Length: 391
Image (cartoon, rainbow, N blue to C red; front, side, top):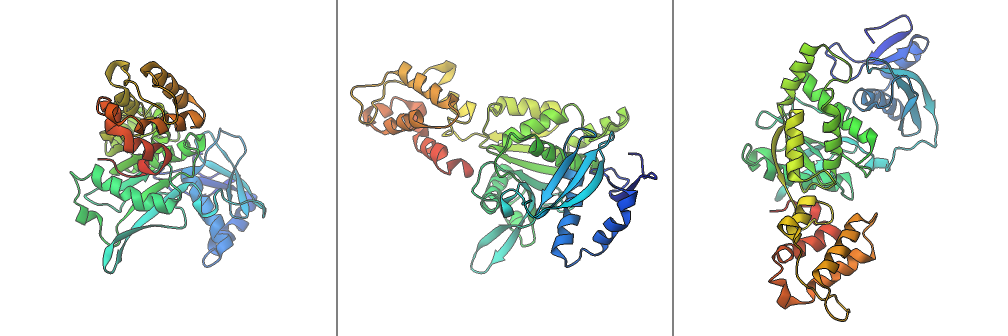
């Protein structure tokens, strides 16, 4: 929308076009203004105001179709107009509405470094989500941000991903410059659903905010988060602005995107091979820094899987399965392994395959791919090994 009209009044936004502008119906203007003015120290009104601002980065949907953003006990109904701005239709109060996962809702969180007397620095994830990244907060002239894979909680993700950031960007920033009280990074925490269109669109909006402001951002993309990031890059390949812009502005935005660096750590998903990630990142315009593959993650990463079986698809030799009579041949192993990888869930076939790896110790030495990967494979597939930095 090109500014206010008799029907629509601006309630959140600015002329810099960083994020979407938010408009309300003129007939509701007085009520919304009272909410904004009176939200201080009022949990319920603050929740409404926070949702309004969240719409600037997280609003998704097709043009002129009804959508809603749900928060604790209420929902804001809205549509996107032809310019990508948000038109709020109304506020619905409904006690049945609860944010997904409660305090573990998917969203953007700040992870802060705190000093703990007599102990290493502690990185703590905020309880409330943010509507935008604080791009002015930088280490080594860049803002740092992470996209999470699977963790038990956003707190676990926040405390563990700082190590991935430190290792990935160690050439440019020293650890003592990272672990300083008051430092923080932005965490896009995903409580599952890494293939979700809404989460892809939310991530796209966060990247677009940084592009529009010409900010330097160093991204750390972890685990299943690589799937979300790949889908976001595919969307950004077509257009960097949430609304159509002149060719000259699109060119400027493409130049700004070069200020954003991306590093993938333990990526998971169908399109998360190192060569694929590098090619797509460079094609879209990101400054690609590198990819760290977890060699034990053979069920979820194509490069780890290829390395385990050897170049050219060569498979390992015979291995005896625990409790089985005789020896399982290489072709049988490959067949069982492929079935397990392609299964919807890792069930009995995967467990049986894993169980047999430790039986014939004298043959392990000849199976160099698995000899390197066995401990990591068990941890990565059935434990928390993929949550940690590998290498």
